[in-house]
Length: 325
Image (tube, helix red, strand yellow):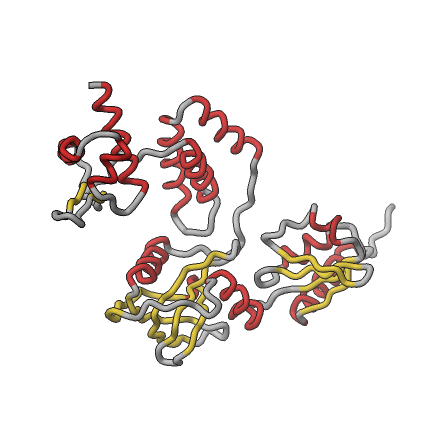
């Protein structure tokens, strides 16, 4: 019985590892005969696992989607990765997912072996994060967009531009990209016959399915690189990236400015710091706290915001005119 149970777990692990297996492949991996594989598949089905089978020489087995989520088998590295991902999601930019992530993490940590629980706890104790200042998005909308990308389904939606004008878009979604600050959709705009990048938080209302579309590849083949180039080229459809020249060596700044937030390039005896996304007042304050000489490069809105902040601080520090008795 122990040997049979161990083999069932091994079979389940293989089915979760790959989309489809032939009966011979499974038999060879588990060192049993095809008849044993058929019996074990029947036992998994009786336990609620939706194992689908295709008959014939070219047929095979695969784990289908069921009415309920069956137990998953994770190796050590996968379990730690899921736990870390849930901790990150608890402070992420998807609205309403924080509490769900905490509940899922509590269930996972309850069944983790002691050795893995210590690793996950160590990561949690040594790691801290701040809540993203980017706009939060609806998880159902994000899931619907991801599904359209996966299934090559055309979608229509209302989109709010930078100037608050609303337009109707008919697209073939390709990929969802997270910049660390905002979520984006890379899609082919059918009405404009060109590729576009959409901020998902600016998609309003529901997606309206538009039938089957073409499975496309973004220019250059890398969705993340494409979205990054579009953000830098167009200013993200919102605030453009900010640039500040800092009189300090790039090596010293890279230890204090995380790479996911800004790039740092040599600029003579100084360094040029450029935000990866749109600039923000938090970026301005953050750079001023480095206690290094800085020069604001742009955009003009960033320079204006710095002047306003400096004026307010100057007024706050000015004498009130009151005299001590």
